[in-house]
Length: 295
Image (cartoon, rainbow, N blue to C red):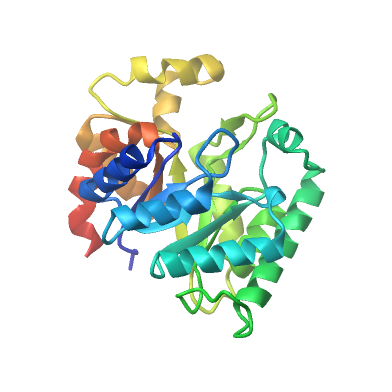
């Protein structure tokens, strides 16, 4: 049986209090299940933004998508997580990743390190969070007995960490690009291999994780070429047809986009989709058509 669909929106743009609350309410009105905040300099600070989002809404869960582990000390992060979960009434989902933008670490005066060192730090962070938040002696206490953990992964070691610890396995659908801080999209076949690798690593789990995919572009249109032009310029080896077929792209007529979302759940197991704030409204008709499947 396929999992019911869930949909999240990653809010990227800082806003004054009234504006922030209004866009969180709008996300809930459109049917989004999770209101998410990333962890990049120049964007909203995750935890206060999520508390405000929960106060402005009634049912939506809130989450980080994803925290840059290199910005955080595990003990201080455990305090933030527990406090935020308590203040949101147990609606928090904790998304974690290694971070991939070296310039942000430099601006923050923090070491960036090698890929191995960043994964090492994330692994220590996950273990410490499990220990601290799993202890009845830790104060403050979260509202949930376990705050669900999402880990964003692509490489083998990250997939192993995700298979061992994550309640939600999030696939980026991309790999680091040649230009620092950029990502290059994976083809459908490349993502097949990554999901298969994760499933092999997770085969001994007592219960399967929820699988998430971050969608990078949404356009419900009869002519996707204009909206895909910037992507084609960044990826000169792609044809228009190949760009439309990328798993992280949803572009085309409504029926085609809805069919693609269903097909990707069948092919990969992606029942939880995250879209970026600029596409919150564009994805709404797709969400509405799929809402009946979430019961």
